[in-house]
View 1 (cartoon, rainbow, N blue to C red):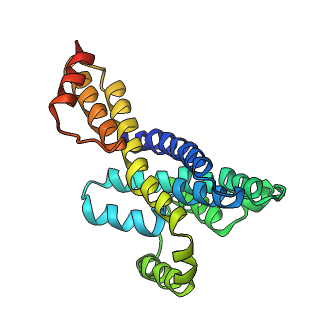
View 2 (view 1 turned 90 degrees about the vertical axis):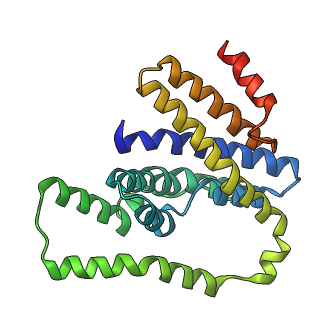
Length: 231
């Protein structure tokens, strides 16, 4: 499915983590405002200034970078500006007053549309402009971390250590596992669902499921469970 195939795992993992964040917050007795904050911070990832540089550094295949750009544009950016705004208003106690015009006229939206148009029309850009854009893109990650560090309140973070731990567990553990499971299912479907692929999928899902419930991934119990499902 190419780079577009990354959309389904990211969307499914987003919905799953939002639901889990809501349920976990309710189980831990968090207030409505804290529940909304946990859902937003656990569900939406920093794919722009963190994910893109890491993807470009770790993977040489340009399809990986295209997939990361697509996930950042659709799942993260558009999802945050629409579903994220609704969740923030609902759990924050306010009414949703955002209009489509305010979303479409954002600088980030206009830049994405302009970039897609220039790429589709194959418009050549001057080298000085490309060099300036490269420098600006390279400065995004360090500037973002610098401003985040300047605004970080360590005392406030310590007082909110419970919700922060819940967010970290969902974002760093559950969300990647859900995305991997959704991606494995999508690969199996698009590859024709051959017998060997289905066997590999079942074993992968069993191992990731064990990780999600804090059980050893490689064990005879998981092997027996996968064999029973295959048979």
